[in-house]
Length: 208
Image 1 (spheres, helix red, strand yellow):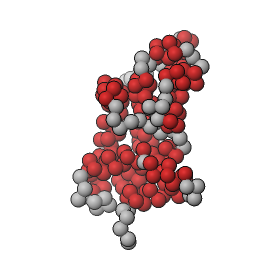
Image 2: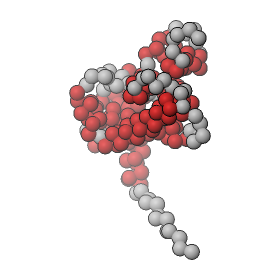
Image 3: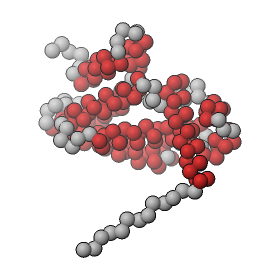
Image 4: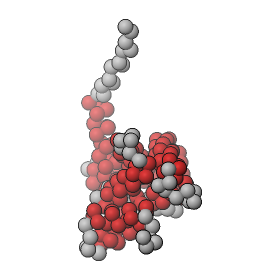
């Protein structure tokens, strides 16, 4: 019986391992700062100081502030895709959509969701040139889109709404200011906040 040989794992040199570890530290720091204060308030100097490296060293990894933000977006999209892939195949489509919406809100409430401006031509241009970002965005969107269409087909999600409107509504949960407002009221737990926003998203506001 013929077997296909598994290619040996590529072993990184110590220098390469250090570069990977430094890049990981940079992206982690950027993700935290973007979640805490947003793109406009975050500075490259602040990132370098938080990581403990010179700004010149940081620029060897990421040539601009926009590239730093793009790296953070690649990471969060990969996390989202990993979460989606881990959902049981037999889970009903609408429950998969609920699970993703819940996950995005929990990540935001945990202070781990990058906050980017809606209008920034330089950032948009950088994101559009980032192949990893585009590939992940398309993959996540297609997977969600398939679940939306399946949920519309089985009647668990309204077929009167365009699928793209539902998709963008789900994406909006990742940067929903309602979460921060409710958390700031100090009246509700994170779990209660997530449940309330999930209810408005999936059940609507009409009395039942």
